[in-house]
Length: 364
Image 1 (cartoon, rainbow, N blue to C red):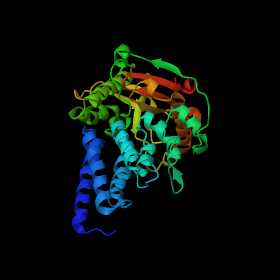
Image 2 (image 1 turned 180 degrees about the vertical axis):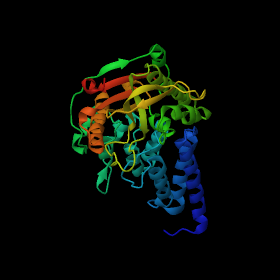
Image 3 (image 1 turned 120 degrees about the vertical axis):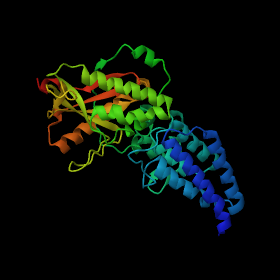
Image 4 (image 1 turned 45 degrees about the vertical axis):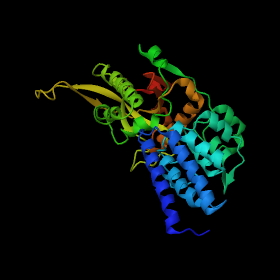
């Protein structure tokens, strides 16, 4: 059905409103999910009335593009990009709109996104929707946040080369605040947002002082995570005596850029650290006196950032992911896998969990 430019005007206006809401959600500033859902549903009903049943694509096609490009950070409507918006409330809205309008592409987009709530992933795992070469079941099966019991049901749809290996969990380092923090509300799903502010930073100092400080301006939960992450970095870097070794953050947001090859195992690994020796530098300059320098080694630790409680993640899947990153990193750095360790940083718990260790090989 042809539509006049006058008829298209309201469609463009709705698309712009939805775009603005998605951009706010990406920045952690959006709260009116019910209002947005009502807007989309009423617009869909209007499209059905004005354009005819089956012609709702005149409205929804532009909204599809917004989900793909902004929410799922992708140029491919059948894939997830490296920096999707991690927002469970927004993903729940997208699933509900799909359910109430039969616009099934939206369920597929939600199935790709790592922040879609488990209850909706369970529902989407039963979907019969398929489009071109992919289906909702496949998207759920390959979503890194899908719980193990759902993945087991969808085993035939999983596309991965990660080895099914058991790894013993070791050496959980807690501080005195662990008990109190575990009783606070969950911050699951904030991983991407807290690390986005540091993606181009290569030192802990610039991370804490410049970028994560901005989080306090618009989100109380992110402000809490900023403070917790700052404490973790300060504790880990500043406590060791000069001359001792410490894991020092080096690069954020893998891949790390040219000339090294691109990391492609999974976008969830945010941090790589070097096992560096602390050196005390003496100087007559009062602004520089007794400062600290670091001597880097050829030993590295790949770190997964987690912001919720441990019960909200699949530990074995996290470790499998880290193992796949170690395999890739060893190729990129042209070093044996023995030169790589792995850890999970539980930001809200202010704890570091060493999950893969090669302590016998570390420099003395």
